[in-house]
Amino acid sequence: MSRRLLFLLPLATLALMAGFFAWSLLAGRDPASIGSVLVGRPAPRLEVKALREGEPPLTDALLKTGKPALVNFFASWCTPCLAEHPLFARLAERDGAVIVGIAWKNKPEEARAWLKRLGDPYKFAGADLEGRAGLDWGLSGVPETYLIDGQGIVRRHFRGPITERDVNDTILPFLKGGR
Amino acid sequence: MLCVVILSLFAFPALAVEPSEMLPDPALESRARDIGRALRCVVCQNQSIDDSAAEVARDMRRAVRERLAAGDRDEQVFAYMVARYGDYVLLKPPFKAGTWVLWLGGPLVLIVAGGALLFAARRRRRMPIVPPQPLSEEEQRRLDALLKN
Image (tube, rainbow over all chains, first blue to last red; front, side, top):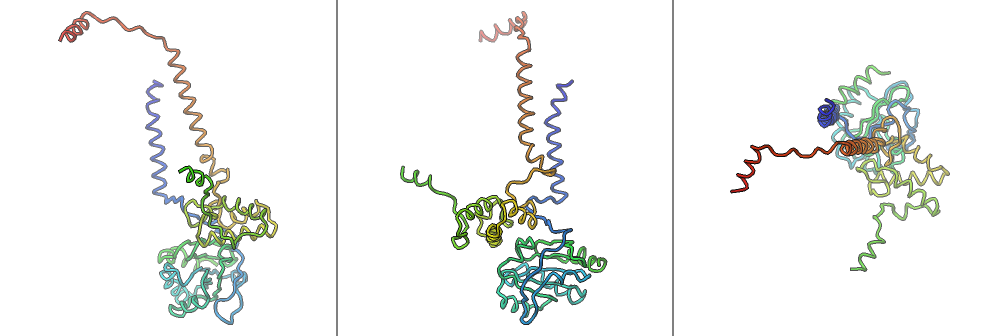
């Protein structure tokens, strides 16, 4: 009898592995994803020079106004940034979202020209030429976007361009429902 | 030929660390190298920041050196990176609840499989050796017939 049970061992192993693979596929497990440790924690220090001439530098105070805000790292040389740009334009215009844009590793004049050409959705715009702010924010590249609540806590971290779906399913409900 | 072999012994993988990035203090620089080799570039699959030419990797190398120059201990530099990028940046994952299968899985399989092999070998040795049964008349007849052809 115990012998027969032994023959079930390979089958059990197979079932175990199949279960793991099925879970990996169906639950969207992605071992290559960095994830984000910032979600649920206070937003990192915000300390960057202004991108637009004659404006004061960006500080943490911008993220603790009681109103949720979006922080978007972008660059004029980044194609996915171009792809997500209309969504930010709409969020700013139609939905009145507070969007902080930070030009990452981008010459300020080039970033300014890019915004001039495409429209500027940023209520506050900063320039992080050396990528120091990016590192503080756990940035892996551009574009990345952080959804910050009114108390300055990071609620979502989008690595890569935001999509229509992110706007409709996550950002808009948060801006409307969240404080 | 021999020359090539000998030379290849001195070859080491090309580092992405540029001379301009290096710290003037060799002791600090050597610590920065050790840390850099253990930190994972966040945009490359399984490359350390010392091996990667990515922009972010360069920023991370610079941050490591700035932390060290400011007097941080190695653990503080690692903590600084983990606070920003999570355990993902550590090429050697920490031992904790989520990773014990990763750390113990291999040795565990080895122990279980080794134990099973040992058990099977012992049992085989203990089994009595049964002498083969003599052939029956019928079998002997068939064998003879086959051998004759």
